[in-house]
Image (cartoon, rainbow, N blue to C red):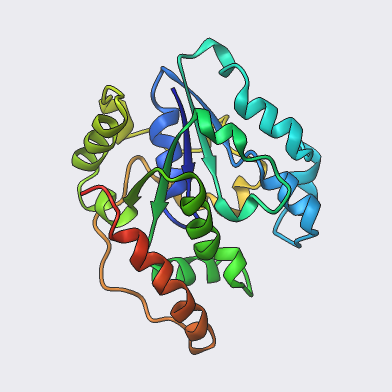
Length: 233
């Protein structure tokens, strides 16, 4: 089985990746199209030079690996993807052979968390519109990070059942620290998850969004509201 897990940034995506890293039956790939995306767009992201030096930047070669044999002789392959990395012209047909899952999070939480890591952001950076476009094109399951954090075991069992994968309790906890699967950008983005040993508990009230980002929140909400209605419950 190949799983393509699609989410914008700050969506619990790295913790979900670690849940699958901790399974012995999965090979894992962290954001395969990130380097091609920043190479093609010129986006000035944190650790840009390190990312471009460490990872393949040709989108066709990346797509070939996504479509090819599962690495390390494992039976299953988990790929952590971001919808906004799939810009026009990047190959997408490889997704036909994947179980596509869309991980979502309330935009207010994404905007607050992303803003803590970068001085500025755009709608493209947080990926809500791109996720809608991708879902409309390839379909798939939807799961909300809030539901996972409220009851990780229940929701991961539901997810595994929905895709025909045996649940493994190893998904619920992991040792603190980085993982070999981490992308080169991990030192900037993964500090909190490197300190974690499992999924954090249920989230509290929604954070206040800086007034300068209120229009972004308003633009993102319809995309989230449409996706959350489709979520696994």
